[in-house]
Image 1 (tube, rainbow, N blue to C red):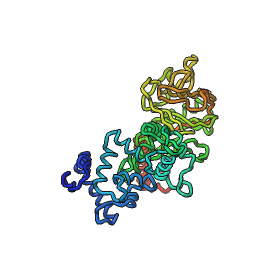
Image 2 (image 1 turned 60 degrees about the vertical axis):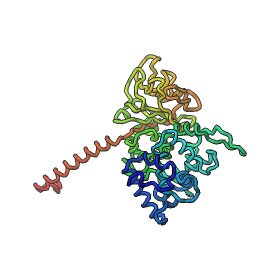
Image 3 (image 1 turned 90 degrees about the horizontal axis):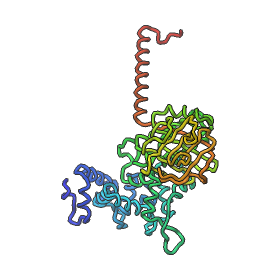
Image 4 (image 1 turned 180 degrees about the vertical axis):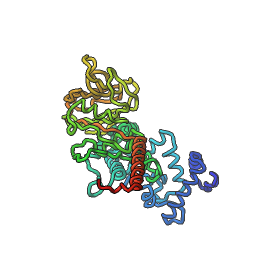
Length: 428
C-alpha cells in the first residue's frame, strides 16, 4: 500500500503531509490497527467508535472523550476514520515540539470551553491516577484521594482571567511551566496513543511505570515517607531502566540518627540514590544523586542530579547550567568553610539543600544551580525523618539474576554428585 493508494478522493488536506511522517511499514501497521478496531466497532470497517477506542487504549472518562474529540477534528460525529488517526499521530507524536505542546494543551481543556481551569486539571489527573495506579490505590467511587490530586494541582499556575466567573485559566506558557515541574504527567499525556501493551521494556505506556519500592522486612508502611505517587513523580525525569526497583537503604527512625550509619548504608549502593527529608514543618523534599556519596572538600557530581519537592506540592528542579555545584559530601573537616554533611546546589553554607553531619539541622536556600526556591517554610530547617533509596537499575538485576543462576546450577550439580554416591539424603 503506497501513500497515494491510502488517500481517498475526499482526503483531508493534511493527510498527505501527515502520511510522510511515517515509514511504509508504520503506515501498514496503522492501517492494520485501524481495520481491526473498525471491525470491533461494527461499522462495516468505516470508522472506530469511542467505546472501542477507549477499550484499546485503556482510557476512560472525560480525558479519553476529549482525546477522541481532538483526533476526530471536533466533528462530534463519534467516528474516527483512518485519516484522523494518521493526522493525529503525526501531529501528536511526530510533530515539532510546539505542535505537540499545543495538542496536549488543548487536551487539558476537557470541557472544550476554551479555558483550562483547575477543575479541568483535576479531571485529567483523576484519569491519569486511575490509569497509573492499581485499583487498590483508588478510593471507593473510582476517585483518587483529594490530597494526592492537590499535590500535583497546587504546582500549577493559572494566570489568565476567565470572563464571566471568578475562575482563573492556565495559559499555554503556564502549562509548559507546570509540565517542567511535573514531568511524569507530561510524559503520560504525551503517550496516550501508545497502546499499554506496546512491547516496550516495561509494561504499560511511557509515563505509567511506578518503581517497585523494596523495604526491609517487618517495616511499617506508615513509617515510610516515599509512597507510590511520590515515586512516580520523581521517576518522571528518569530513564525506563531506572524505574524497576528502588531499595530502601537508610531510614533515620529505623536505622538510627547517625551520619556514619547513613554513609555506611548508602555506600553499598551501586547506583544512584534518592535522598528524602521530612522536616519539622511537615514539608517533604529531597534530591536525586547520580553519583556515589564520597568524601570531598568541594562540590562534585554531574548534571543528571536534581532537586524535588514532594509536599505540599510537586516540583522537579533540574540543573540550569549556571554552575556545577551539584553534590556535596564533606566528612571530618575542621574548617568552617567546609561544612560537614551532605547537600545539593548553591554554595557552601548557602546550599539548595543540606543536612549537617549531626543530622539535627539543615538548610534550603534558593539556588541558581537548579533554579529552585527555598524548599521549606524557612531557610534553616530541622529534619524529622531522613530516608535514602537506592535506584536498582536493570543491569544490576540482570547481574544478580546471573549470579543467582550460577549458584543454583552449582547446587544442582552438587546434588547430582551426592545422589550418585548415595549421600544426598543422608541424615548425618
